[in-house]
Image (cartoon, rainbow, N blue to C red; front, side):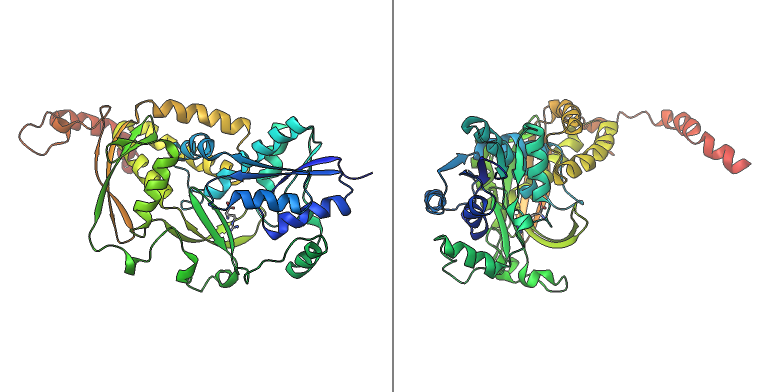
Length: 397
Ligand code: ARG
């Protein structure tokens, strides 16, 4: 009796997930392995990936194009939440995991599989995100994670694969572990494991080094509708287009590099480098538009919600009742977050230099220092008397 009969495996085309195919069948007695590669805009040659799975022993090799729903259903809600893990990481890798899990569960239901499998090890966040998301979407499915148990080194994994016709990587494989999709490149390992070492320039692809960025600033306009970016430089864009173009524009000015030590859910501190130009610009722009259109109390209260929301995404709880409840709050706040934000891109910085909205709460004749000031200055005195009363009494005692 194997651990499962029919398994849907999350497949990337790399050595580890390829080795999972024969491993599941030989070592764990699985009868049939169906692979699923999600197209998140990572730019891999997916037809080659599809064929590689079949050559490695998969009975069926699926490609799921989820680019559109990735941006609309996962990335845009995170932007509405201004979600930054530990104030810095825009969560591009973490957001993709619940979507991949959803595609896996849908395939398992369709093909009558009794288990899901993935190639994550036992040290990372992604295993948590996959396992919890699958459990939330179909608690009857088993979850198999061979790489969490097999205990093979890199060399042993390659040797195991070769026995089953899985070619060892042709080029000297990169020393880095890289996860890539439409909104992020996450890079770790190799020399980056030493937190004192500056990341070598060669690791970057989406962002230029400051030395190579244009010597003139570039101004861009981002249009938002109810907290969702919908236009770039005055032209409506579909979600994938908008993200793709903004990545190019911002990356060209060196915007979006993040080098941080982060706290993983499993208790380990890790050093990760991110390139996420569009996300960095969009969150900054969105936050600015909120400053213009939300009342002070909602703006301030939302900060706490955003912190919790970021942790929910990072910690694998996308499909949880708390996340759904916070979506209700955030959705309500976004009703009037529509307008236009002007951003200046220059030498690694995205600076907000202008904003406008038909729902702007900014009131010029209250704010002005000029002659047309309508603010009632006398009213301030009574307000301050009452506001300061507890402090005054305290001081007198
Ligand atoms: N630390 C990031 C996260 O947990 C990215 C994980 C994957 N990183 C990688 N270089 N493979 O979301």
